[in-house]
Length: 498
Image (cartoon, rainbow, N blue to C red; front, side):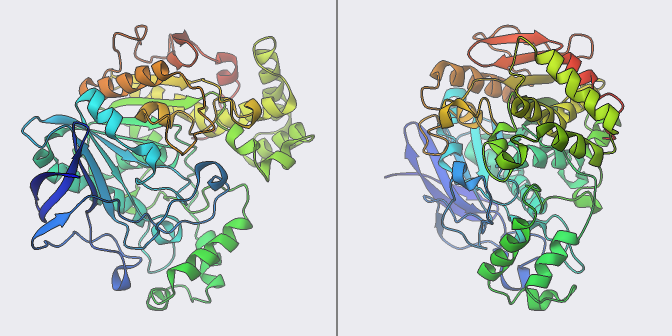
């Protein structure tokens, strides 16, 4: 292994390794280990170290809770509370002032890590002459318990601390701290939108790409957290006793509680409270508070098929989809008559174009509720203030599980990173066209460099507006669609609060 240059950071010297035209640094600590008295506390800035820190291997990921997504995404190891590290891929540690792409992983705030081979930054960094950063942050109970004496949104605070570290140090790695794009998928998409609302994150990044960002619930509740504490026999507020509980016991209690909430895939998540997440992102965008942020956001055509392909959703939906839908919409305050009308609209709009089987209609409606409609509202809000506002949809259908997944949730990630041969999602992207990955990488790179995703190998991609509603389709063909699924969009008008 050829050693990289020795880099002087604000906290000490580090040395990674060179590989295929890159200098790579893994497992760089950006905060003190959140263990002992620092467990369930905000992240503490890393103290300086002596000598040269070896940065050639990934650090452990956060302790992983159980998630049904594991059967598709796998489970990362090793796990540890000492998980606050980041990884850097750079073409050269010179004065190049390259754009920086800062990735926040998904996994329902329960699983995952910046160590997943699917997020290897080599292909992006080489192709674009850019710097790629991935991070670990605290997940599940360790990052998102909400209870008396436990500060809220610790995992989000970890993300902010990592971003600060990058802003302060990335110039030493050949990067430009004045040109940082934060991007993430699912919980990571949720996270980059969260960072848009944080006062302390202002000026730390300049562009945002949110991939499949899910519905952000405004409800603030300590119900799930208190159930976990009850399983552990911890009195609310007794943080000293909680800090003494072995981490495996905390995960065991968490798994027991979340198993009783099978349809709440993000039972532990950032909550809109305090300065760590002061308001809903849509409100921040509507107020023009993010006017200086170039913005790209998109969804996958069949997001929810990832969930309806697995239990318990599969059994719940099959044979009972319409009643289930009407009941679900009713829980959102949508009356039975209006819910029935939504279903009718979707069936009519899909006739002759897409499947009208009950399961497929169910999936389309929940996909739009949970992902696409909220995405459109963010686009509409940001476009008023920022001309560099772009929408995409990923439509390439996976051959996995005999084709029942379609263009499901998370499928676009290996295309964006150029990691189609990664073991993660390997069966889902079998036979995937590399040229589609190349086009997507170039769009993401172009956006990170200029705030505009256009490049020579795709049709002209107009910015989003409420007249044309231009959406770039990344699929078996790359093309721009106007007013995509507009009948379905209008069916939701006036029915969702935020």
